[in-house]
Image 1 (cartoon, rainbow, N blue to C red):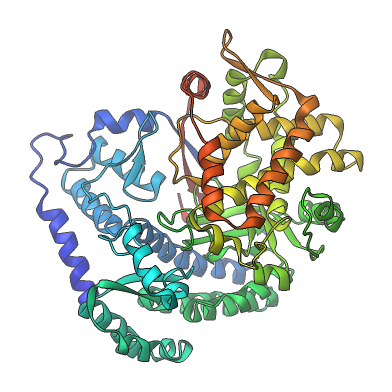
Image 2 (image 1 turned 180 degrees about the vertical axis):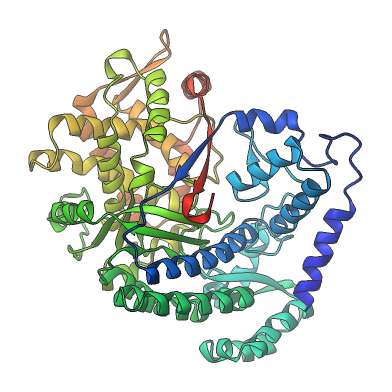
Length: 597
C-alpha cells in the first residue's frame, strides 16, 4: 500500500504543478515546446515491423498474446529502471494531453517518450536533456536517487562483504531506512514463494540497522514483486497455450517464469540455449547493462517475441562451423575451449519491449561467462530490422556523404548482415575472464561494455579475411563487410562517455586514423579508406583490446578509453555535420503490427 500511496503522491505532484493551458499548444513549465520538439519529429523515421503469422497455430497465437502482456510489464519496469519518475511523468503527460484535446505539442512529447523510452531525449545537436518536468538524476533508478558513485564507492570500501549484493546484476540498491526495510519485508510476507526462494534474505533484512547513510540491496523479484509475480503467471499461461505445438518452447517459458522469482537465470538460460524451438522464440529477462550509470553491472529488462525464418536459419547453422579454429587464431595467448555448436537463428521481430526495443539488429546471450561456458550462447538475428530497405537507405545516405567518391557503392545490405552476425559471434570468442579469474564486468565495471563491444566489432573484422579465404565470403562481400566496419564508427554527434557503443565507435575511428586505415581529406571533408592496411590494423587493435580485458586493470582500461575517445570538431565534427545535413532522418520510431500499431 505504501508503494501505491507513494506513486499516487508523485503523480499528484506532477498533475498539481501543471497550470491550466492558456492556449491550445501552450505547455506548463518544464515541458518542451512544440518549437523544440517538432524538429526532432521532423527527423524521425517510422518503421512498422510486420511478419506473416498465418502459419502460427491457435495455441501459438494465444501464447503471443500472453507474451505481449509480459512485455508491457517489462516496458514499464525498464522505464522505471532508467529514471524512477518516468512512469509518473508519462501518466501526467497523458492526462495533460487528454485535458488539452490532444494537441500537436503534447502528442509530440508522447512520441518522444516512446522513441526514448523515458523522459530524457536527444536534441538535434546531440545533447541529452529531459523533455518533461523531472529531477535530473545521475543515479538513474537502480540506486538511491540522491546517491553518488563516490558515496557508494566509500561504502563498498568500508563494507567489502556487501560488494556482491550491491553490485549484483539483478539487485536494486536502497538506503537503509526504516520505510525501505518495512516495504521489502512486507513483500516477502505477501509472497511466501519469494521468502522460500531467497533463504536467509528475510533474516538479513531484519538484522540491518536503520541508517540513511548506509546501503543494502534486494533482488529484482522483491523490488518489483507485484510485477514479477504477474509475469510468472502469464508466462505459465503462455506455456500452457503452446505446449502441444512446441514442447521445448513451453519448457523454456516455465523455466524462465521461475527465474523471475529466484533471480537465478541458469535453468531458463540452459533451456533457451540448448533447445531447438519451432516457430516462436524470445529474449525474456534482464541481461544488458549499458544503462547502468555508475558501475555498468545492473541488467535492464527487455522482452521480445520472435518468429523464426526457418530456411534462413537452417542455412546459417550450416555455415557456422569451425569456431574453435577462429578462436585459436585470435591475437592473444590464453585461448579457451568453446562449444562450436552454438544456437543461432534468423527471426522476424513481432513485438519488442524495454532495453531491446529500438532497432536492435542482433543479440548474443546469455552474458554470464559461467553459463556461456556450460551451455554455450544463442544468437538472435533480427532479419526484418537488419534487412529493412528503409533503414539501409538511411545508412547508405550517411555513408555516401562521409566517404570519398571511389567508396560510394561499397556499403551493401549483404555486408551489413555478415558484419552484424560476426559481431555477435565475436562476443562468444576471445577473453571472458581476467588473468586473476574475474569476470570482465566485475573487474572492468563501467568500462566493461565499451571494451566488450569494441572487441566484438574487431573480431568480426579480423575474422573476415580468413572467412574469405575459406570461400565463405566472395571478394566483394569481404569489401562490403570492411565498409560496414567503417560505417559503424561514423557518428552524428560527440558521444557522452556514458554511452558505451558510441564511445567505442569513436575510439575505433581514432585508432583507424592513427594507423593509416582511414585518411581525412580536409579539402573535400571526406574519408578515404586504405583497404590494404585493413587486416593488419584490425589485428593490432584487437590484440590491444584483448590484452586490456585480460589484465583486468580498470584504471588502465579507463586510461585507454580516455586516450582514444577524443573528439576533434574539425575532423569528427565535420563528418558528423555532413551526415546530419545529408540525413533525412536522425531518429527512428518502431511500431509493431502484432501490437495493433
